[in-house]
Length: 500
Image (tube, rainbow, N blue to C red; front, side, top):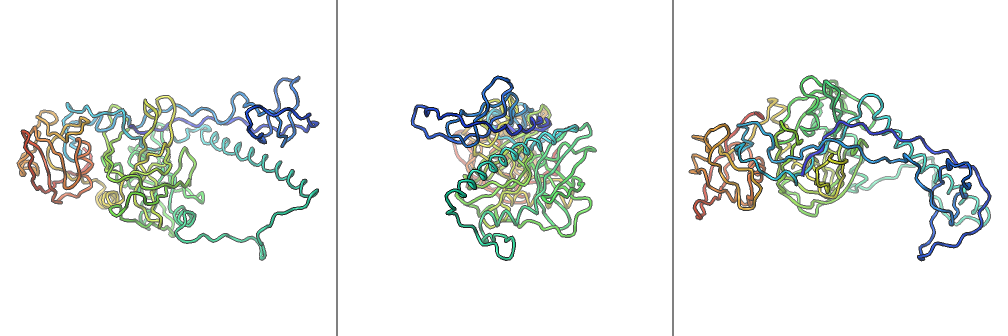
């Protein structure tokens, strides 16, 4: 699994095909073999061959299906660089520790099957977004043309034979259909005004698009770290609401390890409505989920699904040589999540936020962007809101993240036996920090941690993700094996400030 990056503009779409001229009815042709009922195709684009037969009239059930013109929409998706193809600490700087610091020499964790973080490529200057808008308009025009043609045909037939349809009452003018509380439509209607599409741009013009949601009335917005990463160090950041209003924003703080960031609107409106936060610990497998985001740049998109699993260990990064991994004990959902959904809210059936959409598993073997961007296959991952809320509050308070740690270096090898404490730490440092939590609990190099409280630990990344669901000062029970014998100890988690 790996994460998606951004930076390629969407290619412009071809202009809408002209409406073909009317032509005399063609004599009936024998139906194609196979027994399938004929369908009414879209009106074809006039052939470039001046001697080609004129197109059949709209609605002709025996007309040959139209052929897509060269350069038809949509074009194949643009190839983009892989975002987080290396998971589990690829390229991590020595001494980072990620909660249970790890040894650079032991970073052989399997990167090929890491999830993809989901920012959407932002349009480059010079027409990238124009291409996307053109594509949407082409689709709308085709649908509109088809609808108009069918409407005319139905009206003509009704004139001949009389109508049997019944129209809804419109007494008193146009009416708004009321959505019952608890329905998906009602949840979406209440949550959409509190979500924003975030555009992040670096000083060299590169950037991406993601999503965020209102955290408080002061203008703080929660999103993913990888959504805003391009705007750090002097870049540009904007947030656009569903009503089209755009605001400049700035990064208040970001936590690369948690993949959480908080931004703030520079001139926030006075009528901000923060989304209610739920309790991700009480989420159950099978609960309904609603995701809001900007997949492939399509802002304010709502998708639905269920909670497919809880406490799913996920490691992801942007796949670059200098990238560090992010770890989470994630909520898994089958709600459709695509590039651009990153940072958006995952809601429960009441409209409360239970997670931050962050990553997906892709079917592409080489990772997203290797030969074209992949989309949702029903395996999406969200940071539990209980963890994200704690991180966001720390970032707003101090601007820096605080990580829980055990003070031991563990191997990041992908395995099923547990998280093994390495023989040495990064840069030749001790594998077990002197005086740290692990040292006080009697842990030594070579010990294999198999459980943290009731959670089974099958690898170093799983241990890190599980540690980070706790706060510094929490007491946890560690089960480990030494020389074939199992032991259990209780230790108090320490703390580490900042990502370095």
